[in-house]
Image 1: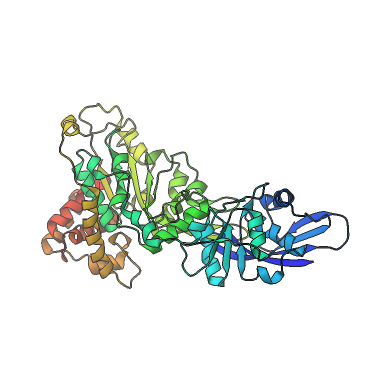
Image 2: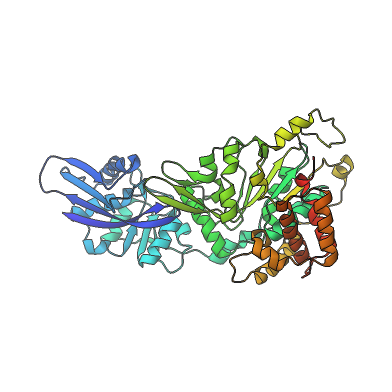
Length: 508
């Protein structure tokens, strides 16, 4: 007897429909075939399904069984087909009416005792179920996440018998819903606060400018100056996530299988800090079965690269395309997958190999050529995409002992939000949301300098040896600083501050 169960599989961060067709022949030697480009984990579902059915008192057919996962030309992976296969087998045995299966999408991994374990990408599958106008049956642990999607019936199941009895009309499954307002209430709650940072007022100001205009930043300073401490507090001063941003970010983390247990949404901006031994595939995404990389996991948040010159050159170079386009495309022989990757890059490095160039308390032992080679590990095209270069000196001991508390993250965030509001109004309908995204035509239109400001910038370009790319970066930074003060025209002191944030463009 033939039965059909609707399920779904992941393609990037989207879900596509998969029809699980189960056919049990009336006679023949027992065998169990799964076709439709299954991977090893899908093929192993045979043994999980057999044990789950038998351990719960259901028959496993000792006849020829053929299971087709359609469409057959797309690779299927993961254990999420366990539940639909088990339900399809019971339906083919006549225990469940085919009409009862219509209007339902099933997904879930089975344990040997029949419990239903959580799967990856529940949020994407729920969005697909809403598009199809169908109910979704999935593991109870995934139900709160799936229930974020409005206008869909989400049914959470704990065991295989619960699902079978529900489809037979002899039981019920718990319907889940999620309070979106409650889930988003934590969007301004961050563990770290700028209140904890002693000194470094210049660096704090630079990060506020970076957050106000969505500018990438690079910090240079000796070990222990607080570069990592400052970077970890940057997500807290960014504007709070909107529901649409939270939904998109949660989808990526759900597909990657790293969504925090018990959390239906990811309401705060992600902060990712990969080790410098990371591979280019882990950073950008990919693999035999493509997975989102660190650039996508930091979407709508911050990607922090500590000890920037220690990263492999090939790893750093793959950052250039997503920094420009806001997404990353992973191409394979059978398919091409695009992941969103709109992030703020914040990086840190020592000024020289020993780390103490310019430090008043330590003697630098590096030669000029060593310093040049060290800094050359970061290519010019990558530095071209980093707007702010700031020096972070060691904090004086008297500042560490000071009892004066710094400014709170919440106060800085309010100013950042005001500056972002001005930019959103300015770029309305142009596909931009911050000054850091401006192209040449936008710079020419919106970065109008006062006559004295233009004269200052011309002088600085000649005397400091600023390159053409540094010139445009100074204009973008000046525009952001002016927005922070609510000024339409860029004044000389705006340009002066912006020039200070281009330390790597000066002659060493």
